[in-house]
Image 1: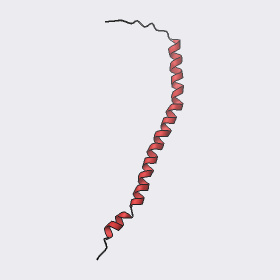
Image 2: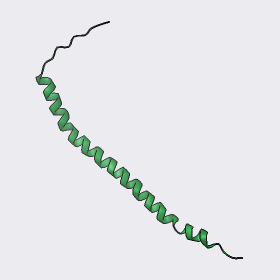
Image 3: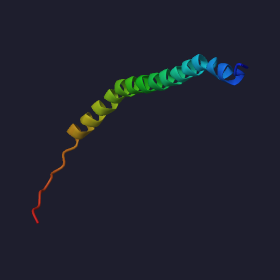
Image 4: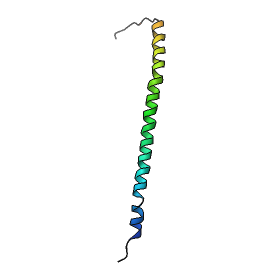
Length: 66
């Protein structure tokens, strides 16, 4: 009986494709986590300045009922 060479050749690439897939998954999550941390740290400055602007300007709100 002749052994199949195509299956053994494809089977040798499984670990490579797994490592490559894990690399891209880890890259995606690291970009997501780092950008989230960046926006949390820089977003606090913007929210403080917006809150200061809102406290300085006084607007009168009138409610109406239809």
